[in-house]
Length: 97
Image 1 (tube, rainbow, N blue to C red):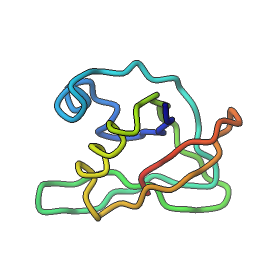
Image 2 (cartoon, rainbow, N blue to C red; image 1 turned 90 degrees about the vertical axis):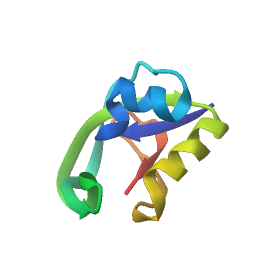
Image 3 (cartoon, rainbow, N blue to C red; image 1 turned 45 degrees about the vertical axis):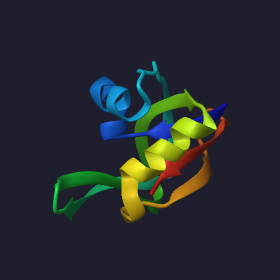
Image 4 (cartoon, rainbow, N blue to C red; image 1 turned 30 degrees about the vertical axis):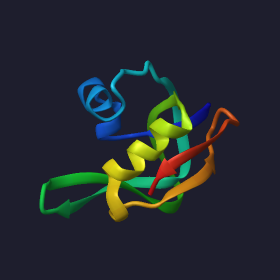
C-alpha cells in the first residue's frame, strides 16, 4: 500500500469513487513548508500546493494501492507532479504539487 496526502478534490468521496471505484477514509495530517494556492485550468479552478517556508497545508492521508495511485496520476494529468514528502506526523507520503 501507498500513502497519498490529499488537500483538494481527492478528499471528496464522489471523486474517489469515480477514480478508484471505492472511497477511502483519510487520516488528518499537515504538510509543512508548503502553501495552498489555486490554478486555472479549462475544466475550472483547482487547488495546488507550492513550497513555501513557514507555511502549512491541512489535508488527509489516504492509503491506496499502486494501481489506484496510477489511476490518480491520470486524473491529476501533467498539470501536477507526484512527489514524496514528509508530513508533520512523520509519515512519508506522496503528494500532487
